[in-house]
Image 1: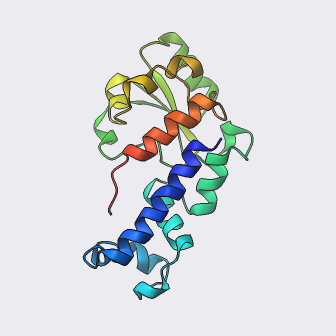
Image 2: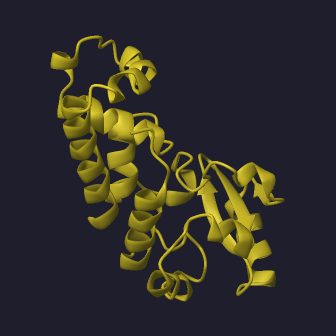
Amino acid sequence: MEFALNEVKTQAKKLLKAIRVDSELLPKMELALKKLGLSLLDEIKLKHCLTIVSQQLGFDNWHHARDVLSGSKNPVEALDMGTLFYPKGADSFINEWFANYQQAKNTLSEQPAGKWLLPYKNQFIVVKKDYISTFRLDANLTLLWPDIDHNMVEGYKSIAWDKLTCEIIKNRSRNY
């Protein structure tokens, strides 16, 4: 798994470059920088930008993002996946929430073509097409959903999961 992880690294590099070039960006990033204990522009390094980007994507920090996106942790049902798959505005949708993966999977199996199962921290959400459209996925990538049976938990560590996750990361709104 490399696509999603590399996208986070790319965004961190772009953020570092943007902060150094655009003096108007620094005030927008002030809160994120304060959380890291940074106040001077010269103190900002790539490792800080990796943390900022990871947090904006819904992870606790860079290490959390790296662990999830690299596929190094098991079992996936017990893994804290952060809020990556819960974009801004998603709370306006009526979704089915589950603390138990098997219950979520059973709900997905009732209508496998019209629903999707996504992780949210240590929980699971079964959503409909309107929710998935908020990810603004390229039409070619939407063809990957059947490869993982519309299930981002079961599809974890697959090429389809990695490519879909990479596109979701690319399309998440950023503060920079």
